[in-house]
Image (cartoon, rainbow, N blue to C red):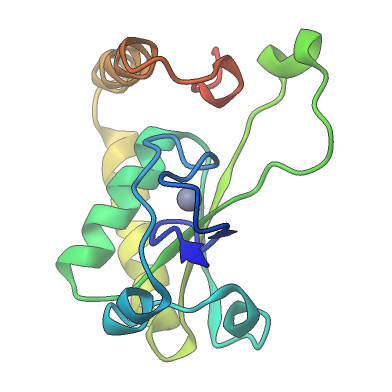
Length: 153
Ligand SMILES: [Zn+2]
């Protein structure tokens, strides 16, 4: 089995990249997951990893991940979309991402993410929009499937 170090999803050995994550990161072995302090799917179920925050767009999810990685906190970004999404209504449904961290780091991680959120709310909205446009263009350039494109706002 291969694993996504970003969202923790499990894949068959023949799969090379995660299809759930916006950036389609390459999959790694279970040994590498453990080396990085990341949980395998069955370990997630044991609640060793708990929710530290929610990101409402891929840009925010990436910012949250960068901040926690900088602090040496292992994290999993779990896509929160669930169920079947009708293609015609996709534009109206906002996907979201759960940021999961070890329960021992939860308090620290949650306050870090809260700070990031307050900071980003203070920055100009224009900057956020520009970053999201870039992300969208990057996705299209790499030929990502349409259903994984960032939400249209
Ligand atoms: Zn993934």
